[in-house]
Image 1 (cartoon, rainbow, N blue to C red):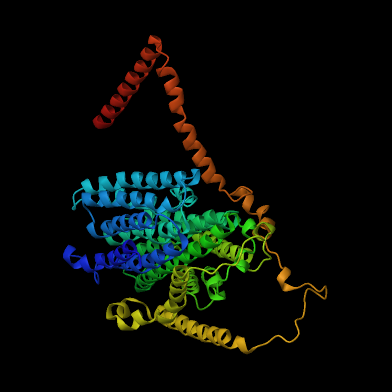
Image 2: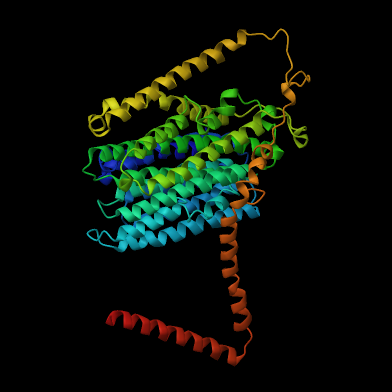
Length: 568
């Protein structure tokens, strides 16, 4: 094993051991910090194994990049409200530069790095203001909230994320999506003060989160690039996770026992969904990233059938997509079916208590459905289609053991977590007393369903080797059409819905109309600098006098406005 790989992997567990020395109560108020560090340690190590098989050069530098990246995330988790948080917050982004060293710095890679630094720097400004506020002043939390919303790609603040995923290698995208996005959300859970967020603000945030789920799902479904499609799926999942914790916060201090029970249920579901997002999304980025690299393109239609040319076991071909498609027995099914169950309970509570949540359910349901369809669309195109002509020259080479180990490890968690999910509800006295009986019973039922599906799947996969096809029959209504000739490009699935749904929010290639317009607007604003330089470099005295006069007038107007405001 590479020394840098070993050192980085071991270092991922050190923050958990160092927690008590930072006076952190991992089983108390600091549980969100412990949860984030634990996911980072387990999933991060699986990503490091994947790197060994994916990259062929500059391995030491890439592992150094991951060491810096994970050091930045760990420091941000551990240090809390201190100026060291700003240092480690930016350090995680600096480490990302080394992650790109396995390939060349293309235009997409440079745009990706710029997007990461932009989101990190802007959010860091708001964190800095929060740190300056004294502990006894809760108003500083609003600045923390804005910074965390930016870094987690919340609805309306997500424009940087698709660009950030356009250039990095598959393992880099997996780390950004599955681990980095968790940090700001868990910091919110840890540092949210009691009662500062009023109902009106929370309801607006819930509505925006529902809109983010919808926009992320629909753009993921219509996008023609697999990386961008998974990036928009990340936006969908991030907003969905925010939605769950915001609903939990909304009824956190309710005297009504029914609403308080819903708050605890959504809080528990928040952690389940974060597990689902971290594990399943990392699997998708690693799996489809490897196949895209083999095909030499990230366009879904041009990667059609690449899965048939790569000797991946069937379990590794589909388990990530099955999880996002809500197939029973997966963690994705547990997460989204539990949300639908709790949503059915919300519908029955008084309108005054859920007037902003109910409209969001329309957006959320549509977004989740389209997001699931996006993963199914990629799976059908990559694995169940006849290989595209441009892939005919690709040889069937063995897959590196590091890649297989990583994917098997993630797949193992996808199917075993639903089986074991009921254990915390019966082993933790605090959880037994806080979770309502109906939700505990629901989790037990989901666990039993997962056990049945898992046993049945193992039985089918184990004994199918004894089944021999004596006579292969063709299908398609007697036209002698063989299954090996099936061709399902991704556009065949999404194009029929584009005219009725997609054209209002995305372009033909799947690029978001809103995101593209926003980025072009930013570009136009930045181009004002050229206009400025054109006149500043002219050397004309009248130009300097004109600009100076305008600056003085603006300053005087601002002063008078501020002075009048103070008098009033």
